[in-house]
Length: 261
Length: 285
Ligand SMILES: Nc1ncnc2c1ncn2[C@@H]1O[C@H](COP(=O)(O)OP(=O)(O)O)[C@@H](O)[C@H]1O
Ligand SMILES: [Mg+2]
Image (cartoon, rainbow over all chains, first blue to last red; front, side, top):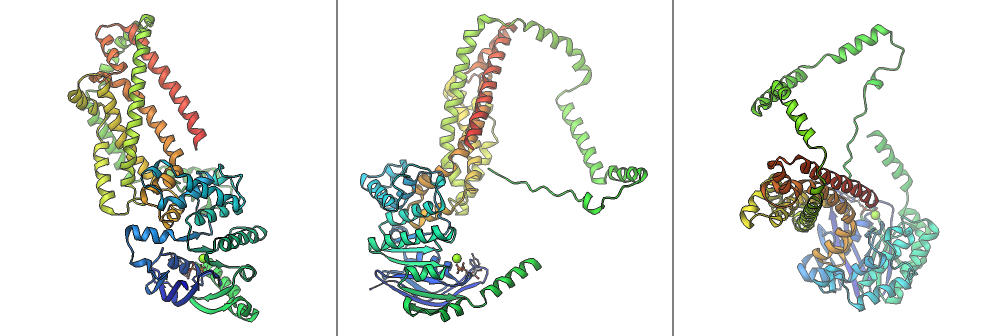
């Protein structure tokens, strides 16, 4: 069954930049898909469209056959609630405790009045602590989020997303801010939790080896288009070389432009 | 709030490469720099005119000041020694003054929070909400505490309650503007992430915005409390409770020793509060 579907999605930013051109991708229940591509390929834009944070200029995104763009109010919030998000820069409340950051994921279904004074049900608190323990942060529950290391912070963000009890987990370059050794550990944790929870996941990654390590399917993107969409075994080095071809040159050109400006 | 004021780099040293100038060159260059522009001259004339106008309208005159000096000296002389019998009364009334200031500040800040949320663009993006709130806040912010006190004395009668209400309302509008600015500089990433979990706006305020901004808010609140203690010691002049009422009375009775005691008590309390709050604020931020 298709959990996530993008059909001919085109996205143009207000300044005219066309970030996505007729992108079509389908993700089946239980699949773990990696989206690969050089910087500027449109991965983050696709992530925002999948998450319902941006509305496609043309085409449609459906999560479990529902188009988020057509929803309002409570329905929209509950649809968002079924999608867990992990961001490159964690997006935590640094001054709040680790536990309170994870409980944010429970707010959508909590009592709207008592939750305002940070009173959360025992079930919610138990779930939050259990998730934190499973990502190895059982000892850090009461610590301030900004006292943790980068890898630990991303695990808090993961626990927050999982506390939503989502159907789908989307991550945008979740380990790009971490050094390679930590990155592998965090990605492995994400994938382990996704499997244990039986979720569907789409991970935007920059690193080919990480994508090959964890994904069942790889979607290659470049300049806003899908270049290939194949099971991981069929993604050859030649395809990847093409995907990243001239990335160095492009980067250099961009740098020259910056210097000239 | 961390408003960074960009310092314009001083262009002089770059334009004139460092070469040992002769003394004469240097003097001429300085002389040219010191020549005032027309704008400066016009500005200076304007300031002098304004000063002249404002001093005549206040009856400020040099001779009167000189004539008055012996009276001032006499007045100060009669304030010594301070009358210690006044001390218990002064202390008791200082407590009342602190009570007015603290209660007024706390309730004022509580009122300011919803106002400031409405006035913050990133919380309520609808321009009509923000603009209406800002206009209301700016209008009422312009009314001094003493005027609020006069209003509340006629509404609820003489006494500390009127003073507390005056401080509360003055604080609410003053602080609303401050907090709105604080909220608008907040890092919205965690807020957006919370929105994407499906959390309501009220929940995001309670779980993301306030925890992030509370230290800054507390620090400004302490600063405002300082000012409110000063304001509360004057409220008595219009009958709105606190130590100012007693000060007014002792002045009318020509009891300058008691006046001195009262002034000393206010001085000690305001200065200690100042020290305490600057110490606490340093630990906050
Ligand atoms: N807010 C924005 N406004 C305008 N253009 C943008 C914005 N964000 C991204 N872009 C442009 O859209 C294209 C795709 O960007 P992005 O989705 O961030 O790629 P990736 O995540 O793969 O690096 C790039 O050309 C980028 O410059
Ligand atoms: Mg990106």
